[in-house]
Structures are given as structure tokens and as C-alpha cells.
Amino acid sequence: MLWRDDPRGKSSSQGTPRPAWPRNGAVMRGLVHVLDKPVQSNTKWLEVIEFCQAGEKEFVSTEGCWMQFEQGGLLLHETA
Picture 1 (tube, rainbow, N blue to C red):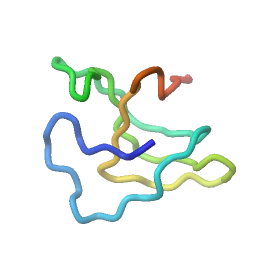
Picture 2 (cartoon, rainbow, N blue to C red):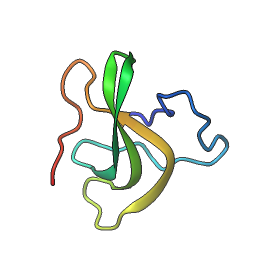
Picture 3 (spheres, rainbow, N blue to C red):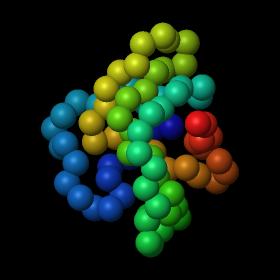
């Protein structure tokens, strides 16, 4: 999975280094956004605030990192 830019077209923190891409099994925390128009065939996106890489124990802050919920199938699973 690759980090995405803000699908709303708003300027994200360009120039700010992003953490390593999340691997399968990573846990992401953030805000869910449902867009009026699809971007990359998705209307549902996660603005990632922090994530914990698979196999790690600590969460890492993210800035300007987004993920779509689907890409040829479900990518993200929501939990409470």
C-alpha cells in the first residue's frame, strides 16, 4: 500500500517526509472522509493521523498521509 495525497485536492504537507508505507496488517488511526465525487474510484478515504507498522508496538505520527478504503477490493477494515 502507498500513502496518498489529500483526495480533496487540498494542499497537504508537501516536503514533510512521510513514514514508510504501511504493510499488510498495519493498524491506522484517523478520520474517515466520504467525498461527494470519487477520486481514484473511491469516495471513502482515511486521513491517517498515526499508524503502527505490522510487527511493531509503537504508533508513528503521520502528516499528509491518506489511504483509500478500496483498490480492486477492500484495503482497510474499520474497527471501533
